[in-house]
Amino acid sequence: MLHNRGGLFTLLPHRPNTIAPKKQPLNTLSAGFVMQAQGHAQTMVNIFDLGANLQAATDMARFRHRQVPNRLELESSLFNLVGSDLGAMGHSVVSADGASMGGFQSILFIPSSASPAGARMPRVRGFYRAGSDHRKDGQAVGW
Image (cartoon, rainbow, N blue to C red; front, side, top):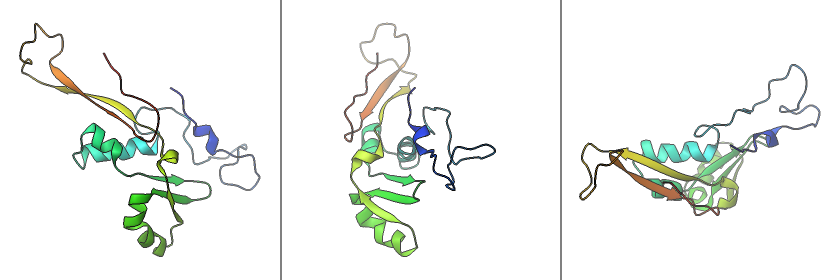
């Protein structure tokens, strides 16, 4: 799995994420399927907490917090809803397009105890759902 988490480190002295001995930068270098990327975590909230299907979950507006310089980027539809309120609370908030939010493609298997109509001895009982993010070039593919 590829990721860009090392991009949050810096070599500038006196910065919180400076690479130096005995420092503990605010970063995780271990790759992960779900909890690594902010966009993936938000999509999971959309699915499990808000009940969205995969495609709806990936289409929903996202935010991104940039650790350096401590700025919260909200997609324009979300910024229009809560941006001024968050700014009034002291947050550094900007409106952003979806390009900086990352991409999300996913396939979900939903188990079922019943065989689909017309199926001959299915190896696995259930069905698949997929979603592909409109923000990036990609697709959800499985077999």
